[in-house]
Length: 425
Image 1 (cartoon, one colour):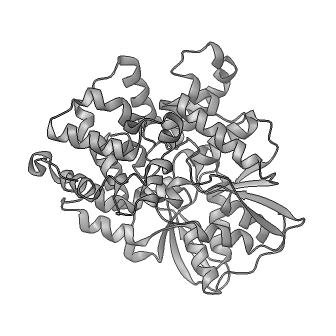
Image 2 (tube, rainbow, N blue to C red; image 1 turned 180 degrees about the vertical axis):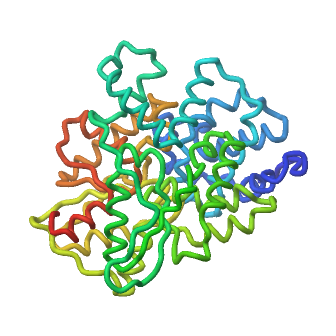
Image 3 (tube, rainbow, N blue to C red; image 1 turned 180 degrees about the horizontal axis):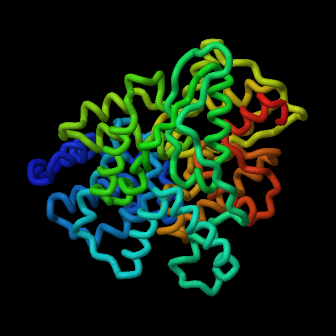
């Protein structure tokens, strides 16, 4: 796409944005892959339309105020990246643009307060635990609470599980085969602590010692994808200091959004002195399904016990696993590897469930529509279990399956493997 943007005026992220704009040939293959275009049918609410809007803003031909509503409705799911034949790095474009444009944004006081609260509460498990516990008291009052607070309260589970603090080190069982570092995540430590516990059990059982560096923090994805670049840079650099890539065989994430966030570090720090350090870290990052899938491919994964009964499992592709990281085969093969498991494909499974980080709080109407569509599609397969690989999807799907009266439990891929190893599946 031809443009007239002064890359030097924008700064280091300008090169990232213009690379994506240049690559777009306006073919339209992205349209049917875009959840908001599927719902709204508006060209400006499609990736192709949003690229034009961002280009026009950068060129000074369009005001940010006029473009913002359409850009804010983008989930950042990157379904368009999978569909694009030209290799447009749309995820890098929208993330960089939001970071560049955020200092120019003007919101109402309540919206700014909600945004600030989200970005400060979610990254801190201790603060989020306190807020979620308090939210349990307020949850029954959600219908009469201020409209801005209702989406977050609606998404809270009926019971916040007890948080188990992770140790800094877990030894391998049996013969040591390697050393892994685990990104502990933020919200999932509060909402689904068993994700990390199951990950550690499966890795140590397969001969890997697991380090959980206590200096680590939020991956930065939430701040980055909502435009708070200064906050994100601080979180990114904290993790660069916490993880020493040369010490580990892999740096493991069990949250698709967090893993994709870590792999984005080189683009985030493009043109800055610590870009090489970011590249070294990103090169070691693997999703837990990606890592275990590699062991399975090489015949190195310890055998699991068969399911205690035939199980029909509907597998949901988390967007930041399937689209952002290109990981689709490994989770399915790990599930099929368990004797007695049948993996079911979800109709229109490539469309986002509507979670998308903080999207289901900031754009609740659209997120609810997508959540309802996803739950309907999943339940049409008549599953015994529903499985995904991301805490946001887990929360969104649990909420909407529950609203439709579905009885199937929603689990993480690693939880299923953990139960199989323990003979409890």
